[in-house]
Image (cartoon, rainbow, N blue to C red; front, side, top):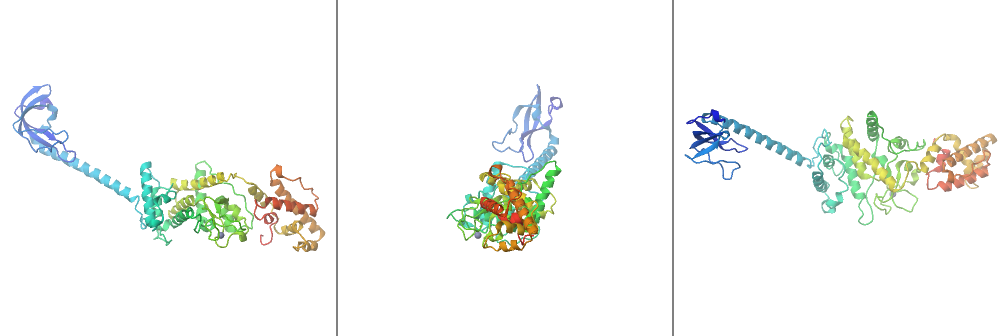
Length: 491
Ligand SMILES: [Zn+2]
C-alpha cells in the first residue's frame, strides 16, 4: 500500500508466505507509527498460519513482535484480506491445474506416439510440426523394440539389426506400419492395420533380404509388377501435377518407349516406374533370378548387380526363373516408404499429399540415383538408345521376311521361306533389313560405328553385319532380333 493510505492504530494484512499453488497467508498487524520514507512500524496482532520451514521468500513473524516494514509489503486493510486471499488462491489453483493437465496431455501424446495399435483409426495427419533430433533417436530405438515384439522375433534379431529399417518415415507412420498383421491378414476398414500391410511386408522382406549371416539370402523378394499397380501410378501422377501446379517440374529417370510386344500391363507401368532398380541374383546360368531365389546362392540384395525394370521388361519371359520369377525390387526400404505413402493417400480418398509422402517418393528416386551412381550408369545408356531407336518405325508383319534375309542358314529353314518370295517381295525384305541394321548402327557411338552399308548391299553383306551386331550387342540389348524385326507373336 502507499504510505498516505495507512493510518496509525488501523489493522492491515502483512503477507507472510505466497505459495505458487494456493492462497497466500498473512499476519494481522497494527500500525504503530508512520516513519516516512515509505516505511511504517507495525505490531503483530495475530501471526496467522506459520509458513513452512525454508519456504521461498517467507517472512515469518511472532505475536506482539514490533518491526519496521516497507509500506509496499502491506497488502490491504485487514477486513479485505479474507476475500482477497481467497480470490488469489483460486486463481493459482486454477493455473496449476491447467499446467498439470497440459503436461499430462503432452505425456499422453508422447507415450501414444509409440503405442502400436491395430485398431487405431488412420490419423488425419502424419506430418510433424516439431522435430527434436534427440527425442527422435530415442523414439526410433523404442520402435525397434516394438518391431521385435510386433513381429514376434524374440531372440532372432538384435535391436541394432533393425536400425536400417526404421528410418526416414515419421515415427507415427512407422508405428502404424507395425500395427499391420504379421501374417498378412487384412485389418478392419478405416484402421491403420488395413492401410499398411504392403509396407509392413516390404519392411519384413527388407530385413530378411539384407541378412548375410551364412552368405546366403533367403526371402521371397517381390517383382515390381506383382507389387505396384494403378494406384501407385496415380499417386506419382498426382504428385507430378502438384509440382507442376506450383510452377516446377519433377523429372523422372528417362525410360525408352517400349515395343508393343512387351506385356501390356508392364508397358503401362514403364513411363512412371520403368527406372526402378531390380536386383539380379548371382548365377552363372542363363536364367535371371532374384537374390532371394532358393535355386541360387546369391549375395544380399544390395550387393548384387542391378538393372532398370524396363530392361527386364524386354527380356524373353523364358529367361526369367520359374521359381523366383526373376529379378526383384532392390531398394526395399525406400519402396516400403513409398507404398506407405501411396496407401495412406488411397485411404484418404486421394485427397491430398503430405510432405512426408512427397519425401517418400523423392527417396525412392534418390535410392535409384545412388544405385546408378554406384554402377556408373548414365541417364541414357547405349541399350536405352538402341531400344528407343528400334521402336521407331518397327516393321510389324513385314519384319519376318527381313529377319529371314539376315538370319537364314542351311539349317534353320529360312532359306526355303525366302525362296517362296517373289523377287519384288524379296527386294523389299532386303531393303527393310538394310534399314533396320542401319538404324542400330546409327545408334552406336561414332567411334564404334562400322562404315555405312551401301544402299545396294547384298544379302551376304547384310548377314555379316547382322552377325557382327548381334555379337557386339549380345550383353547390352535383350532380344535384339525381336526389337529389329518385330517377330511373330509380337504384333
Ligand atoms: Zn530364381
